Image (cartoon, rainbow, N blue to C red; front, top):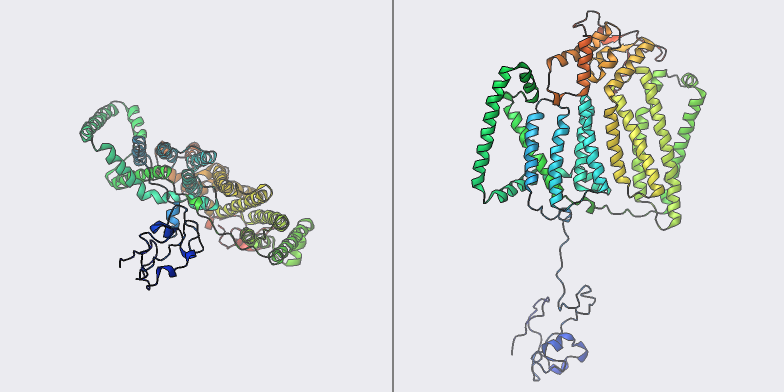
Length: 594
């Protein structure tokens, strides 16, 4: 008796029990029986004779069945079961193509610019180096066939404009925010995200190419130079001869003319042997950064493919009642604030027993946290909102719309508290920073309201753009100068000033501090003058704020070590009409807001 092979796709369970061939019901023989030897059972698939072993019926997978519902009509066996694709593989694009010479040259130029310009400080040099990175990314994106889209142009322009801040301002904290925002916007320009996952992860996605980018560039260089090693000898000799000629004749001309020597000294960095490791590190960072940007532009991760599962819709009462209660609480708080505004602060101070300064600083941080938590509540409420039709959409708008409007009033109340706080204690870096953050949160709430009215597909990108615009405005406003101006105005009104705090500001504050009378002026400016005198960076590492401060102090220098500086850095009485005799706390309430 011949062996019957198993049906493809079915396990081999061994020989079937022997039965007469005519014992198989006719209805159980499908297309597989005909394929084995004809529909009458006389072919090779069904041996003749009463003792022959029948062929097991083949499932009719061509037509689909309950067991194989997804079978293809032309495939006589069930399709293989595929394992679910990992999330990282789902966002990983095809490997980047061959790197172009233009990309490699731009990366090399960026590395050289980083070595030459970034070792002496920050200023316009960051913008110059960023142009080299943009050139490498543009060459790689063109090779990959990517087009410049409107939002990509917005991210590119924003990232370059943000680097104007370190070129204008001397203060380190606005510069830090501007540089971080530049990196985030540049990464968004390379990825092109539009969803929340695309915006959040795309802003840091370029970090994925910090290793793969240089490897990709090295492989491309080997491919380009595989058959042309002989030409590289000529290139190296050309570069060496040109460098020797520049060094020899440059040194001769510098020795012959002092003006040319000064010009050459300003254009070339002052590199010593101790700076060599730092310069090598800058070269490697510039090269790796440019190649990482180019690799991301050629093959960006598709972060938009990551999607959050939609939350389970809640019942109308279960969803709406807690939010309505929250709306009522906000309304009661705002009514109290309006009563205080129209009734006057004196009445509130008499009824509460608080001083003006205590009332001013009492609620800002609480209102800031209330604003942040409201944004979280809105996000969770939208995730679990009922969504069965037009009535549910009306309910969502009717509940969340008033909450957003009331939150805007809370934002205004928080800013008013900060204004009172500054009147009582003066403006500091932290206070102006949290006020700027509160303003941005208010802008986000306005965008949420607009998204509810006109659709929200643009909301993630609009929030990112508003954040970058806030950082840019914050840097261009020169916060150190604003701090100095507000404290000088407070001194003119009350006769009180904290020189010990103001002398730690950057060169951006020099124009405002220059208006103080002596000896307070010299007390506030002596540290800045000493720093500017000791440090003489080249033009590309000097900000406009530093240059302006040098001109002011050159015309009217501060007296070194003035003998009449106030003890403890604080000048004026220990209290005024705002603090009710609180003493030295008039300058710093001791809440960490300096």
